[in-house]
Amino acid sequence: MSLNMAAQNTIYYPKDSAVVAINKIVSSIEFVHADPYFRYDSSYITHSIDSLIQTWDSSHVAAKDFVSSSMKIAALMSNGHTQVDWMSKGIYQELKSYKYLPVQLKVDKGVVYVLKSAQKRKQTEGKRVISINGIAINQLIANYTAYIGGEPHFKLEQAGLYCSIYGFLDETISPPYQLKLDDGKEIELKGVGVLGLNKLLQGQRSPKKAFTFEVIEGDIGLISYNSCTFIDEFSSFLEESFTEMKSKGIDKLIIDVRLNPGGDSRLNDTLLSYITKKPYRQMTGRMWKVSDQVKNAVNNYGIWDEFFPSTFLTEYSNTPSGQFIEQFDSVKTVPVERELFFDGKVCILQGPSTFSSANMLVDAVKTFDLATVIGEPSGELTNDYGEVVTFYIQQTQVYLTIASTYDIGASGNPEEHTVVLPDIYSDDAMKDGIKWLRNN
Image (cartoon, rainbow, N blue to C red; front, side, top):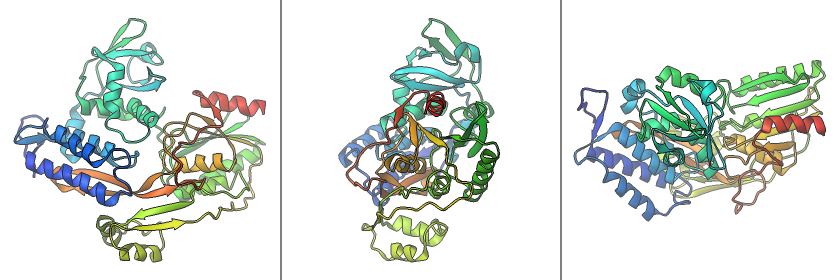
């Protein structure tokens, strides 16, 4: 139920419907998530919902306000996987007409820099930002992290990279944007539309391709592994890449997963078979939370048919909702033998955006000493919540993604609560990766 109550592009929902929807979001997380209150208890979540609802109008709620509010509530119950999607049908027209902040930001030890700019690049890129439109930049970043679940350094990274989107939702600043830099200069940026925004978010810190290969520095192979997706294409890509390295006599390799948000962990096994012969494991156990909601998705929409055997799907369907299916296996994976096996020096670059299945990769590499890990701490705990399922909240036209399992990482310790720490800490991982390959 929605009605267009303004001449502009704003869509409104009856407040009663919005309240039902936000409560449905929370109850769905309660039913599906393996531990919905692992970060905050239920009383805190209830108080947060009540506080947000009090900011709504007495009769109707703008779609944008609902999306903003529901994202913040989901973030309180999230490790980063559980979230409300900001790309809601209700705010589609507003997204198309808005003029976005045309920069990406980097937060480093409390200092905020312009990482990439769509306008006046020479005047802004690499410069420290003090404020935007008179609002302290650290305050804006703090506002934006409220939309994001997960570890603090992951939230800061995402807030900077997607500050344009969070700025649209937060409404604290609006175009034109006055950036005050630490040298005292003020730069005015007009803002960009959706096409400019898409261009800004592609490339640096937000790659367009799932994986690429190139030779850098004349003799170093670089695999930019940006997404654990397209398993068949990835297999062909690796065959071609390692063939090229062999033909050129390349014996130094960088695998960059700093921008990899995850996907299908099976791709990691294929990659590792080219660089190690050591047995390893990416995870040692999984606890599946059984729920009616996921059963419906499994039985009626076949969401797991491609990934799990029918025997497990039957077991899941027959297990009473609310119970857990526990799967623990300490058996290690033995890499497939490869004719193109790479026996040179290998380092892997990671950072705060290394997440989900990519986090499983670096966890295995670090735990079993398969290669040298360089960069910043990864974006996710090694024991974390995964296997996401997406639901549609009809009343307010938003998509909700919920993690349905608790996954035990490579070490096998279910009580461990740590991210993957690099062997060599670096805030310029590419530079230091090249240096390490040259000096070792």
